[in-house]
Structures are given as structure tokens and as C-alpha cells.
Length: 438
Image (tube, rainbow, N blue to C red; front, side):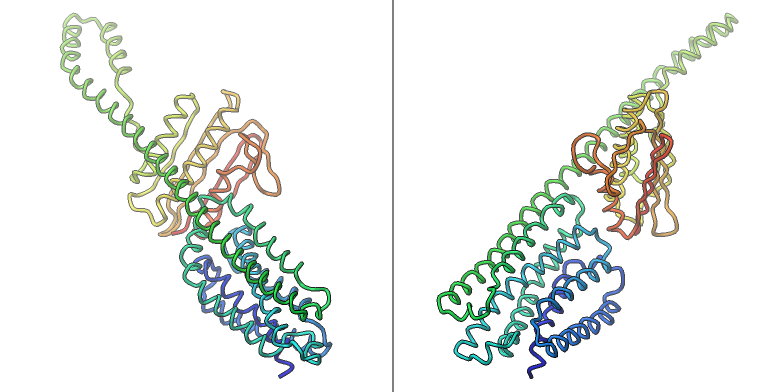
């Protein structure tokens, strides 16, 4: 029974890992059944081995628990397809909550052992306290199941506010530090009545504050995400509207040209009767130049066609050569919105880079097509001015301080679908390649 105490103390890492996986189930690199088959026995074995070491050496579980938690976090991050910022922040959040529960159970243990000097000398929780510790951890995991698999999961899977993850990790880290700071230097300190009562109150307050701040962050993130998504949808609708207006203007010009065709044929007939070949050539040349260009159709998919047409019109207005090879059917095996977001981000970056390049060197080339039945391949090439700001593999924005959002967004969208994105630049030519999976 004595041996169970350190083993069970370390065993709370198992409900912690379970809770951490709730919101990222769709981002696993391997099937859930296969993951459980090897991870659960591994964690149980590590907890048992660590508990035996602590028991033999009569040492507290804190050092072993810290190493086990770090190993579990590395395994957690390596088994997911999402970015390090997201997986690391989720892992830190779970650690913060369990750190608050640990502080609460430390107070419960002290209350149970009050007046028992021999039991107080042990470096672990008493058996009743450690069972209570496990019960609270598993109960919390059960209570958090629904919000974790719904609200938090939607937040993790959405890529529209990736910047939020770059700062949120500070909150759980602060709570972890506060709980570590609360651990008394001498165990006997807790057995003082007023200290124990204060420890109870502070532990419970920290736990509820942690949950409160997490809930506030979740609500704020959902609101921010909704606004960003609406802005992106409005941008796509604006592109489609401009595309529609251009098409309507071209159709009207074509109708007017047909209306005038009869009069033009009469004029040509008169010139032909006169036998004036030079006037006929001049007249035909002028008529041809007034015929509107109807090269507005790039592919069968209307959404992608509208996005490409929008940026094609912007490029032509700036006199930037724009080459398009778009072979996308009406029904796509990949998410249509994600495809349009990738196209708009890459083409917007290409257009901005071209505008900063000497007019004689400007060029944009887009290629997009399906490969097999579930892959969409996109490649955008453009010239640039020779200056690329990159830090630790992350491209920096040329318009403001900090990271560039466009390339980061494309990378997140690709990784979310199980695809990849690569960027190369050399000799004044920037090339972005993206593979989206259905």
C-alpha cells in the first residue's frame, strides 16, 4: 500500500494527457486506436517505474513528475499535426489546471494528516489524499470533455486568428509559477491551522481564476475569429462582385459591338465597291481594336475563378505580366474556402512584391491543378526586389514590424488539411508551393 502512494501521485499524468488530447483529436498523425494502444501502456509503465524509484529512495515525486511531464509534453507535440504554438499552449493550459488541483490536494492531504506525526514525515500524499487527487483529476477531465471537444476544438482547428496563440501561453505559465511558489519550504508549515485554511482558500481561488480566465479567453477568441471570418468572406464577396461587374461590362460592350456590326458591314461594303483596299484595312484595324477582351474565364470553379480574376485585373491595371494556368473543376476534393484563402494570400503577396520591383522585372505566374482524387497543387512565382526578411524560418512582414500573416496563414491552412507548403527564393524569383489534401 505504501508503494501505491508515489505511483498514484505520478499517475495523474494519464488523465492530464487524456484532457490534452480532447480538443486535438482531428489533428492526430495516427489513428486514435493505434495511439492509445502504445501510449497508455507506456505512460502506465513510466509512472510505475518512477513510483518505485521514489519509494526505494524515499524521495518526493516532484523531480520525477517534472521529467515525466516534460516527456509527455514532447510525445503530445510530436503526435499532432498542428503548430507548436497551439499544441504547446494546450499542454501548458492542462499543466496549469492540474497544478491548481495539486495545490488543492496538498491542502486536503495536510488536513487528513493533521495530528499524525508519523504520517506527516512521509514525502508523498497519504493514500486517501492521493485517491482524492486522482478522483478530482478524472472528474475534471470528464467535466471538461464537452467544452474541450466542441468550443476549444473549433478554436484549435481554425486558422483565422493564429496570432492569438503567440501570447496566450503566458497565462497558464503564470498560474503554474504561482502554484510552484505556493509550495511551502517546510512541510510542517501547512499543519498550522490558519496557514492550512489560507492555503485551501488560495488553492481554490487560483483554480477558479484559471478556469475563469480560460473561459474569457475562449469567448474573446471565438468573437475575434467570427469577425476575421466575416471580413474574409466579405473580401471574397467583394472580389466576386468586382469580377461580376467586369464581366457585365464586357458583355455590354459585346452587345454594343454586335449592334454596330450591321452598320460596319454596310460601311465595308461601300468601301469594297470603291475598291479602296487601304481604307478597308484601316477600318478593320480600328474595329478590331474596339472589340472587348473576353478572357475572363480561367477555370470551371467559380470561387477560384473569381479570386484569380480579381488579382489578374489588379495586375493588368499596374501593367504587371500575369500568367495563369488554372485547371480546377467545379467540384473540388478540398475545402473551397481554404483554397481561395491560399490563392488570395499568395497572389496578394506576389502583387505587393511585384510593385516594389523595377517595372521591367515584374512578373507573376500562377499554376493550380488537381493531382489524383484528393490533392490540389498550387504554385505562385513572382519577382521581388532582392530583400527577404526571414527570422528562424518565419517570414517577416514588409509592411509592419512582426511576422507576415499571409505566408503563416497559408502554412497553417496547408498543415490543417494534412498537406504541406514550401517557399524558396533565389536570384530575384520567389516561389511558393502549396499542397492541400481533401
